[in-house]
Length: 198
Picture 1 (cartoon, rainbow, N blue to C red):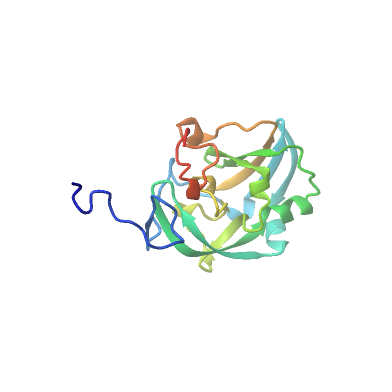
Picture 2 (cartoon, rainbow, N blue to C red):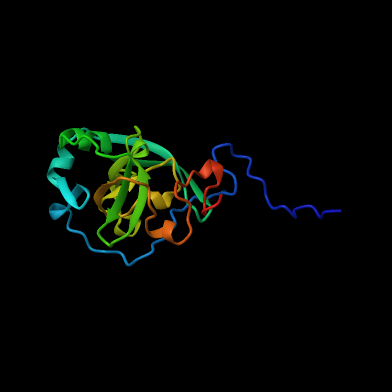
């Protein structure tokens, strides 16, 4: 006989992936200290095989069509927060503006802190993947990756790199920071792809 509650609470909200719980706050989790970034001097560099293809400045980014998304976010540490509102620019708009024809199907996303995470190009090009500069109609706070971060809402939140400053095209998929520590190479919350082998 199994005592009632042995298997824990079942989440009845169909918007919450398996193994996640609903969070009303916005927890702060970082692998490195929060940097100070002067947004006026910020650039996003795009490269391939150690060669810079182009870069976009803050002023150029802000001149591109703005995309607003309201998405549920799921963290690998098991919290999920619903209806988070972000504003920014689609990756596809940036590549079009810079006249970049993607040279490979894989990317390594980089932050000013040295943090990296791998994201397939197909995921970067999705409609709701954005370079974000606003959360809930306010500038993104530094501890949450501001003033500018990547948002890839359909993957676990570690893929949405804080303090974004690089997109490197790579010929083959390879692990970034957390992937080197055993996190899953893709990170689909609905398949519970938290760690390698899952």
